[in-house]
Amino acid sequence: MPFGYLITVSAVAIGALCALAPVRRPQPLQRLSYYFGLVANEVPFAAFFYMLFLPTLLAFAEGDIHSAGGWAIVGIAAATTLGLVVIARRGIGDRARIDRAMDEGLGAGWRATLDADLATGLRRRPPLARVLFLPVLRRRSDVRRVPNLAYGDAGRRNLLDVYHQRSCPQGAPVLIHMHGGTYSGGHKNSQSLPLLCRLASRGWVCVSANYRLQPQSRHPDHLIDLKKVIAWAREHAHDYGADPATLFVAGSSAGGHMAALAALTPNDPAYQPGFEEADTTVTGAVYLNGWYGDYFGQGPESSPLGHLNADAPPFLVAHGDLDPLVPVAEARDFADRLRRASANPVVYAELRGGNHAFDLYHSFRFEAVVDAIEAFTAWVRSKDGTPRPAAEARPRGEF
Image 1 (tube, rainbow, N blue to C red):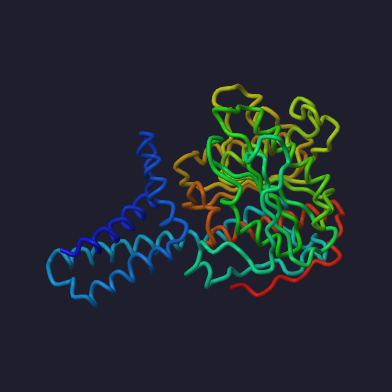
Image 2: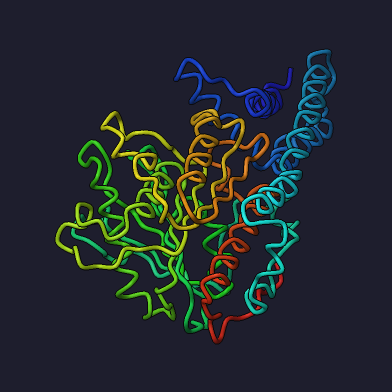
């Protein structure tokens, strides 16, 4: 029995099973299901190539497939491959589903309303080599990362990174992203890096920030930190070529919860102690695989649902329908209630088979989401009459 081959194939098989049918209860198994299913679900091609195809070739080359047990493992690998095909088809198909969500949220003719300059270069084809073989490679040679800039007095939890195009085009819009981690973990150099690097390569100035964590900090401490980041960007982002008059907030999981709260509570002095006069309004919000409820039972004021209003900025919400940590019904409910309350558009994209942290990798699914975010922000900027950065460069060829 080739035990090394068995362990590798079993890991992928369990991951594929958890991706296809995630466990939701009890909570310990739910967490295990999430971690096992994440890679198989979001990067099935890499899982197949590196953990099934190459190990199977090696097992045959070394003569390990010489028994009934060896052939049984090959059978498991074949069955797992079929599961990965199903998973991959769902991810590829999300582009069409996202397109329909954009039409529903912005109107069927929304592309025709885009400013001509902003519409130029909106990408429709994913970087195939990167998606297939190097989905964790998230940096770009034309993007500079300026790390660990202080925006508050909480040490490393009040540091941020700036991503900008090396040529520093002037008049660039700003995107601020907050990481997830149930408000108790995570860091700024982790989630949505494909999004930050793409937009930075297109002339944006992107900010990714740490924030204070529980149990030492509680709501509204995290929200106050994000408001400080917005105030920091309004004061300092021009040093990197930005015009922070156009500023979007985004976040993943807990970071999405925080971004939505910030978007829905602009200039609220209760969340700006000591910097009440700072402008914390935002142009739009992007809510990825978010949490939508109360903050650990602190009441409705700690949830975005407690702050819905007619003046809410445009929102783009994306959530996986097989998210094992946050049920998709909560995302649907948030989008429906926000649409009823807000005078601005709400794009709700439901990703078929999407896991909770679908924004970690270059995948067909997340590349389609990034395309939609770029198009959504172009639509919002076109409606606002926001000028295009004077020196915004064309995107370079994708790896």
